[in-house]
Image 1 (tube, rainbow, N blue to C red):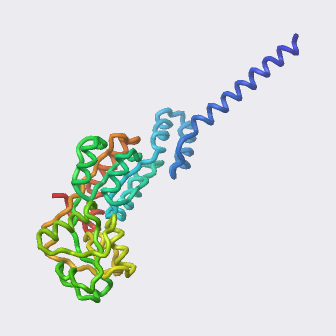
Image 2 (image 1 turned 45 degrees about the horizontal axis):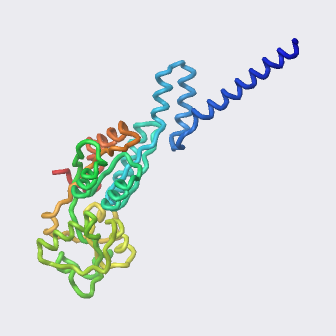
Image 3 (image 1 turned 180 degrees about the vertical axis):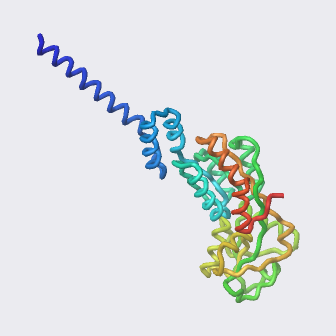
Length: 286
């Protein structure tokens, strides 16, 4: 009898340990992020101090914020994403940079994202009309077009009308992309019709074609030309000032991190974000 009781107690204890082990494994599962290590060390510290508040706070910080942003925002948003991560230990900001029209298509098709930043109002309106935007979008910057050429401007381009020269290979954005829509408006305003050799899906693709010598000239944003440095030469044209692209940003209805999305938008629209954007050549939102 005594031996049976001991065996029963031992079996019960072993079962308890097994169940405890399974529970620990489940609570530690989830998406792996760059902040996983710091979150783990943080929870250990919280348990030593006996603070349940600190422990729950650490768990909340271990998260990923997904931002879909226009290609022209890549440099500035990448920098601001690092700032946001510094301000939110354990949080990783993941970006998807592409043409605004492509981003809207992905979002409305169900791609998971927390924040959408468009290079124009039209594509943000498409997202709003599709009921994927939470609240009112906020305008945070504006941009205008400029001409980029091979370094030193070997073709001697002086203005928008020069882009019609027969010996030039010119690239522009596709009409559905904000930079392409802006190009069309300049054409309408000036009565000058371009004959591009290609229409690209994002402004960075246009810039790349000129940088790599696949085109003599292209139409990109002032900020893209500035960011390219001496890889290209920029030729400003006065007609561009009549066509200004306004950049709106908004949280999305299916955001998995709505609070972080709100705080990221506050960073972009606040003094720190505006300083970075201004430094890259963006103008304030009108």
